[in-house]
Image 1: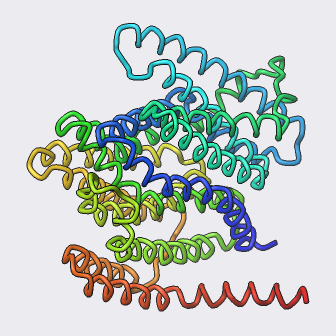
Image 2 (image 1 turned 135 degrees about the vertical axis):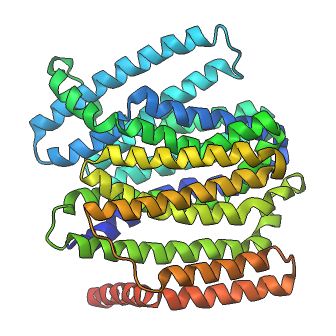
Length: 470
């Protein structure tokens, strides 16, 4: 199977699983915004933000090195067992150490839902690690099934805990915790991970080698957290939890793009690692980058054009202000697509330090803009700072990456992107139904035109397969 087909196959399989989880999270928005006050939703969002921060610190980004090293171990049973045994050893030591520190810390500092948050962190660490193990084994189908189980558990537990038992914010956290627990349990037994627990194979040299790859990713993980979520901390501190609830809702829609980027990135990281030394590397990476950026640019501008029609159906009236911040966050998320594509090229070459340094740059920019403008323009400061920080990171990585891989963007693409986003965002804020219809029509035509070659070749591939089977 050629490189593009393998990438497409892996992406499709992962998409089937991940899209279930993500779609469910959006269908739950009417439930969240109807049953939870803005303050409650803001509290849950803040807790999950800090959980996201802690996971890579606790694990030292172990799951990323496990995934990368497992790719090199494919077909080598002995090496795989040794790697997995060391993975479980480090994972166990990390979780035990953190639990002790957490219990001591929370004895002096009050944290809402103290024990539930600890269990949430615990299962997030396990599910994150096991998902990367599944990818490292090449078990993308099992990866997808575990995501589907996570989605189903999330929706059922949310309905029961929030609607029936009226547990509010606590019910929302508990449902996410249960979903990650089910995911971990499924992968542990499905992939028979228990057969790899052999602590007699613990190798300090191997652990050091894995840490050399993963530890430089910790600043990157923290920096990504700062870019993505320092907004929440500053908003909660300056404007309050209710404002954070509004901002969290405005972020929900751009997260669709982030989620789809994540789906592609999972298969792209594997392809990048496998083909980083290929003779046609520059051509292959440039082709994929241009194709993906065209698709996600149109997805972003399409989301802005659709939002006037979609937003009122999903969101309760008390959250309507969130509508104002969506275009800036969408544009920032499109910039993030390019950043993620470039990140995997760095990681394929095991240049994790470069990933961290560029992420730190974006984090600093995000915080500075937030701190200066949050009191003057409110939530707009958070949205704009995120957009600008992503833009700077994208440009920096594109230039820096030329030292290692020469990725060429198609001529005229940047100018076209500026024009279509300017047009769409301008009409977005006019709040006129006829202009909204015009916006959506123009964006649909533009998207079909820009992606015509890709759509045509995809259609031809599908029809050829259908008719060949007949």
